[in-house]
Image (cartoon, rainbow, N blue to C red; front, side, top):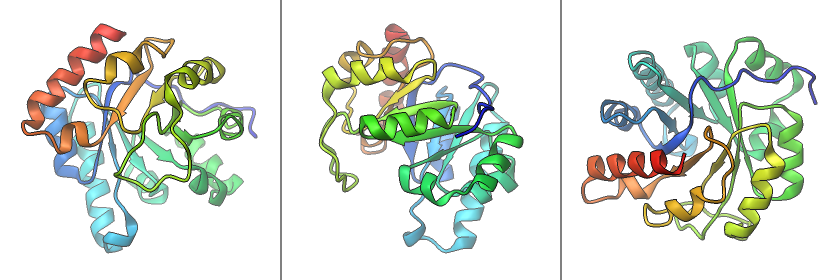
Length: 219
C-alpha cells in the first residue's frame, strides 16, 4: 500500500492496558506502565469530551519519560494533539483514504492496526505499521466480535507472519493467561493488551504491577 513504513516504536510494548479515559492513562503511567491505549466510544461521548480526553491523554504521555500512548480511532484529533501514536481497526483503515495515511505517516505518528484473520493480517502488513494487533485470542464479553477466538496455536503462527513488525495479542487475556500468550510471541518488542484485567481488578495498581512483572519475565 505504501513504500514508506510508519515510524517504529521507541520502546518495547510489553504490558499494554486499553482504557476508557485519560484519568486511567495518567494513573497507569504513574504506576510505571509505559504503553497505554485510550479507547473512547464515540457513540457514548460528545465530540468536545472526546477531544478533551485525547488531549489530556497525549499530555500525560508527554510528561512520562518513555511513554507510548496510543489513541484508538480518533486519528484527526490525535494528529492535531501531536499524539505519539494511533490505533485503528479494520473499518477505520478502510475509511482512512490515502491522504489520511500519508498525513499520519508524515507527522511521524506510530500506527497500530487490528487484525483478526490471515487476510486482514496481510492487508495490515502491507501498510507497514508500527505494530500489528492479533485477536481476539480468547472469547471476550467486553466487545461484540464477529470473529472466532484465534487461540494460542494460531497466534504463534500468525505472529511469525507479522514479522518484522511487533505483535500485540489482545482479547480475553487475564493475568493468569499472560504467560501462555507471551510464549507464543517471538520478539522482545511484542506485547499483550488487557482491559478488564486492570480496570475491573479489585486492586488495579497491584494488577498493573503484576502485569509488568509478567511481561518482563516473558521478554
